[in-house]
Length: 159
Image (tube, rainbow, N blue to C red; front, side):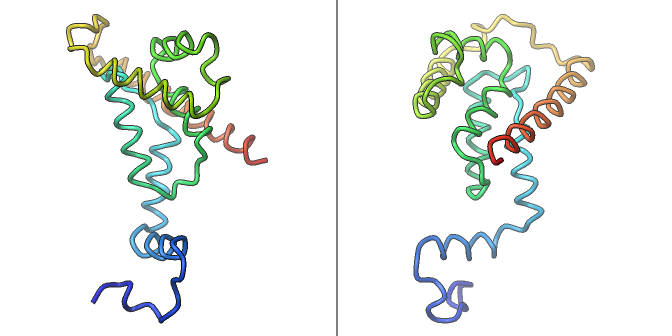
């Protein structure tokens, strides 16, 4: 017998009610908080292409469909978590500031750049990909800074 069959008759009459019941059953608050944290503190790794970072970010959001972030906040989080060269690429492709454009256009641009970036081989990226202790510490500090910035942005957006 499935969990949904054990619910009292008439409990679920809409898709939203079904979604809420499912999420309450299978997503603990701890799991949800962890996944929301992965999203809000997203940062591209030094050894990661834009396409790989984009896939990882999409994975986080799909693992937590009830994350509660709006598309504008998600786009901002992705952009701010990218390595500087990719933020510059997004800004250039936007004819200025990437975050000033329409959200749907922003997502399309991210998808286009990820598809283009993913078609290059490893040899295309000639940046230093060494994983020194210093870069790991820098990544962790940057991750914390991005998380704090995103939390402040979320508070601004929600107020």
